[in-house]
Image 1 (cartoon, rainbow, N blue to C red):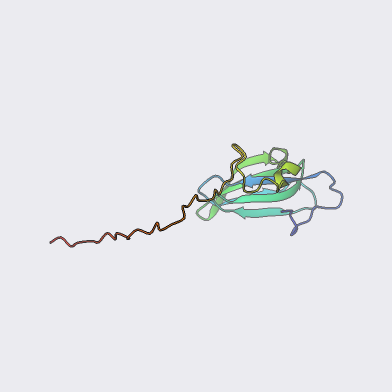
Image 2: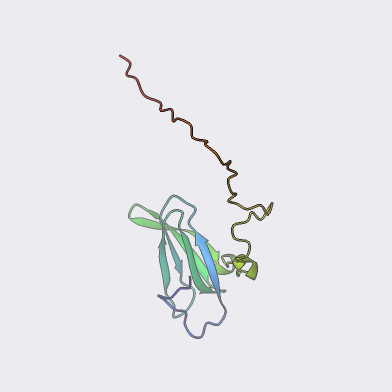
Length: 130
């Protein structure tokens, strides 16, 4: 998903799709402040994945939230957060429903016999113990 709320300035040409994951148990604020004429700041909840577009020379500051304060806990160059472009193999729909390891269908048909295979249902019951 591209960043559409705060578009990059028109003079920025080398943008890339990036991803940051908050692997902590605390709320974080992700901020890019080294790009002139651009404001980027997002709250990232624990376990949340943040996907955004940024210039390759951007640096993301990670501020970890504490009670009524935040500490700058990391600065990450965005070139380390770049996502790989999806290949045409990722969108190959001809293999849907097949196990790529053994090429057996994931959902296999049941081999049923014709005839009466109905058996009585046995129900377990609870007894009270005093």
